[in-house]
Image 1 (tube, rainbow, N blue to C red):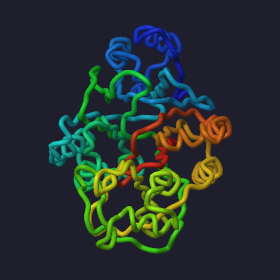
Image 2 (cartoon, helix red, strand yellow):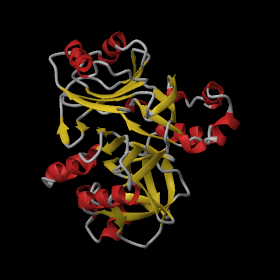
Image 3 (cartoon, rainbow, N blue to C red):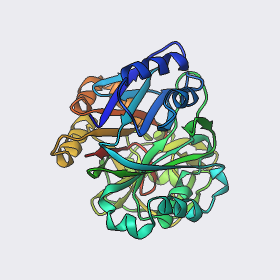
Length: 365
C-alpha cells in the first residue's frame, strides 16, 4: 500500500504517536503529513522521534477530516511511502511578514532534484505543498513571489485553531509561527489539483478596487466610492445590513471560468477588512454561495476518474461552518470517504495565490 490514512484522538501528543506507530507497524513512510488539533502541544516533535527516517510536516487545525469522518480535537495523518512519493524536499521560510525573496530557497529545492531542467522534463510528477502559519497575514505576497521563483504548482492552506491552543505549522520536528512550510514532492504516478469554491457570479457588474491596503487586508473603495455603499447597492440591501451578507456573498476575481474568492471580514472605520487582501486596480464581481456538496461532487467526479492513492483537502473553515449549519457534514464527508483522504478546516487556501471560501485539493495518483 502506497498511502495510509489515520484519524486519532489521544490524551496528549505522546498518546497520539503511540497509536500512530501501532497503526503503521511494518509501513515505511517517506512523508507523514498531519493536521492536528491546536489542543495538542507538540505532535511534530513526538512524531519525528517515532519516525526519524520520515519527513514530517503539518499544521494546527480547527477541525479535521479523514475519509468519511469529520472530527475535532483529533489528528489526521497521511503516511506516504515510496510507492507514491519518489522523493521529497522540505524547507521552512521564517518571518514571512518581512516579505522574503524566495529565489534562493526555491533554487535550493530545484537543485535537490537535479535542477530546473530535470524538473521540467518530468513536470507532470512534481507538485508542491505549502502551509502557512496564519498570524503573519503575509500569504498574498508570498504566493506571488513563489509563483515567480518556480514553475512547480504549490497548493495548500493556512493554519487554524480550535477552542484552545495556539497556531503553528510544523516541520523538522519543530513548530513555527509567522512561517511557511514548503514541500516539493516528486510523485511516482503523477497528480491532479482540484479547486472548488461553490461560489457563482451574482452580478455581472464589474467593480474596480480604487483604494485598498493590501498588507493589512482593508478595502476602502470600489469605483472611487465607499466599498460598503457599492456592495450594498449591488446586493440591493441597506448599508447597515451588509455584514449579514459577507459570507453568503463574497467577492470574486473572475478569470475566464476560474473564480478566486475573497471574503469580507468586518467593518472597520471607513473600510472593510478582508480575509485575503485585494490590490488596487483589481476588478471583482459579487458572488453567491451555492450548494457545497453538489458543487464538490461535480468537481471531484470531473477529475478523479481513477482510483487515487490519496486525496488531501484544504477546506476553508467558512465552508466547514456552512456544511455544519446546513447539516450536510455526512454527505460532504461521504464524497471523500471514497478515497484514502485527509483534510482540515483552513484559515485560507493556496492556489496560484491566497484565496478563501474555497477547497484546494491535491490528488496523488
